[in-house]
Image 1 (cartoon, rainbow, N blue to C red):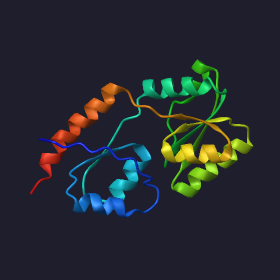
Image 2 (cartoon, one colour):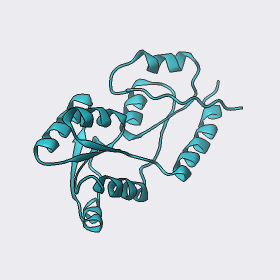
Image 3 (cartoon, helix red, strand yellow):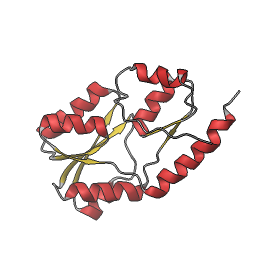
Length: 163
């Protein structure tokens, strides 16, 4: 029987929670893109990531366009390819900026705001920086199908790593 715990944490800062999860016997972590990368670098347990599908991204950007056509999308360590078509489809001005840590994420928000961006799309950490800068924010949402598929994958990964 698998036990699922749902935690919301700020993983950009080194945290005792990460190592505590290992000590407590957590077998698999499911997270989002940037957070998942950072956790993989700092933990010995498997970390799965909810995928960001093109359709999910399109829905999130469409939601952001209700606030403003000037949108910031931050991505971890590399830009998303093919994003230009989304700009054309939605008629938006999309700034895509790469971050590597909390400081570069905050800088991306501040610089983009100074250049006219009025809404950001991202996770809970970018939400905090957006609020501080006075920007609107739209949370990246993952479709229910992708959430279920990732949880199913986690159920197979956990037993594979048991001693």
